[in-house]
Length: 221
Image 1 (cartoon, rainbow, N blue to C red):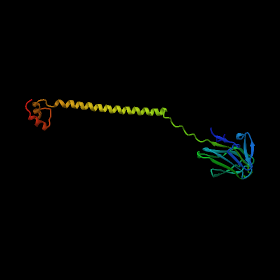
Image 2: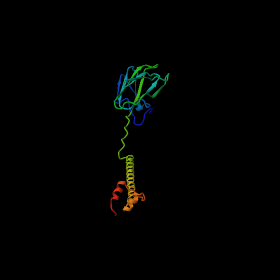
Image 3: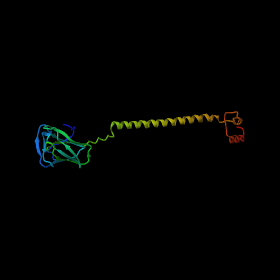
């Protein structure tokens, strides 16, 4: 079927959502969708359909004796000239009108009115309305999906590496401090002679001046 997609709904001429005003005739035919269509030659006759959906298509016929009709969707009107194929030809089924990107949160009303006769007559023939279903909302991603588990695993590994790096830095700092302490302590003078040598600059041990003055007051060790 021209213009239709899987999941589309077809509103046939007997659908309860369709209301007719004026003189309409039910005409069977194997070429039509649902094996029949509705037609009128009365100017001013109309048909309305109320629907929910994101798009709508109008199927109907064109011919040498067809009219111009007005199509109003949500108070916006379009004129469609269905006359064609002179002097005696026609198209049994075509898409007269299509509208998309409709608001899916509210109902829409489409009205078709037979407005003016064409060069050969005033026939208006409608086959069906195709209603495009409301788009489905994609499902939310579960917290237990593999992608979520992978992200959590990466976070745990990263935190573990950071913790290990901090521990390594602290241990190296402590070992270095211990090595410095072990190097400085043996240089401290152990006897008075060492102190005097340090004072005279003959030893590698260096003492503060106040410490040397106090040591000179002591007796021999």
